[in-house]
Length: 108
Image (cartoon, rainbow, N blue to C red; front, side, top):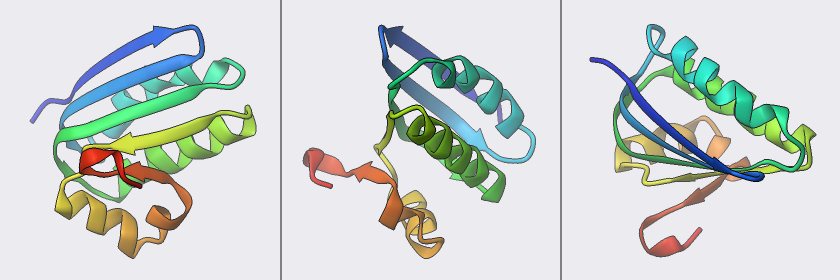
């Protein structure tokens, strides 16, 4: 399955909507599309994963990179729209404890 990545940016606010599967095949494309967002100071990056049907460890690696890069530039990363399956993936790896993940209704 293909990956669809829609990036909208205004000043240091970046909103990313991802649809499809994030795996070893599509993760490099995702990282390439996210790279410009990490080159600014104080990036505030929100990634909507509500239309992501599958993600493997390669995809997690992209989000670890994005989290660390944003944090190193005094920015932040917020993930939204995680399915139960994706939420579990972040939780069992411990990433759910260090990353900002907003669930339905905007509660962290």
